[in-house]
Structures are given as structure tokens and as C-alpha cells.
Image (cartoon, rainbow, N blue to C red; front, side, top):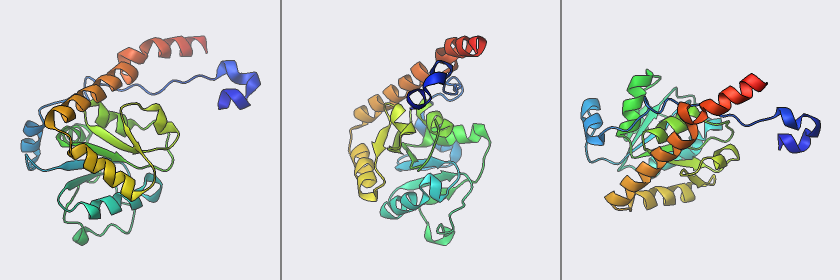
Length: 206
């Protein structure tokens, strides 16, 4: 769009996403990480990482939490939405802001990452989760459409719920394959190794 409307500057406009340390954000045995964190080995776990606010889709996230009392939701970040009342959310683990190494273990322990932002650039947290192989269900905003292998949903709780149920209805082999492909996609498109050439090319030429 920028190239289309800024015609005379189009040669100075290029797409260069932030790279990700995929060696750090790497998969690990889910049962092992859950044991380390004291989480149930067989529970269905969904994670959200970031500020819990309206612009991040906190209203839809809350609806999904209430629709799924049989699942555990890990919220890793500051709660800014006043509708989140701790005593009413028995299926939620609030971690607050935590060190990157601890967040990594929560990513590894989760089955699904949820991301319902209304406005976003190229989210780093989302790609971190995908890098460890955590399948992601995300809002279908324009910037998110560049992320293949993530499941895009409209701002509609029924549609989101349908995708969650669809994921958990898959066989263990199907979920494992989807996790593997998710990891491979991030490594191939957003790792430091994959983007190094373009980073050097654009910055040196610019």
C-alpha cells in the first residue's frame, strides 16, 4: 500500500520484519516443561502473551475463557481490562510480566496461543510462540495475514470457539504435524539466519 500511494518514494520502501532467535525459542518435550512448571500433564492449555487490553482483543479473550471452563488459560502480561476479576476466573493462571526464559517454558507447555489484537504490526510474541511449535489462533487483521500456518479468525466468539474445538478434535499425530510445520515456517521465514542477508542488503544500501 505504501508503494502504491507513495509512488515517488517506492524505491526507498521495503519489507523487513524483525528477526527472531529461533535457537532460543525452540521446542521441548511438553510433558517435561509442564512438570517443571507444576502444570497438569493432560490438561488442554491455551496461552496469551502481552497486555490484556481492549486493543489486544481482551473482550473476545474473556468470552473464550468463560466458554471453556475445562481448559486452562495462561495470561502472561499486565491485566489492563477491568472486566477481568480474579475470583471469577478459576480456569486462568495469571503470571504477570515474567522473564523471557520463564515465558519460553510457558510457550512450550501450551497447546495453543491466542492472539486477538485489533491493531498490530508484526507481533514478536506471536512468532515466539509459533517458533516453539505452539499452534496459534489469531485475528484476521491485515498484518496477521502475512503469517502463514497461523489460524485466522474474524472478531466473533463463535468462530474462535469453532477453531479451538477443531484443533482439539484433531488426532495427536495431526497436532504434532501441525506443530512441526508451524516451527519450520517460522525458522524458514523469520529466523536470524533466514533474514540476515536482507538485513545486510537493505541497511548497507540505504
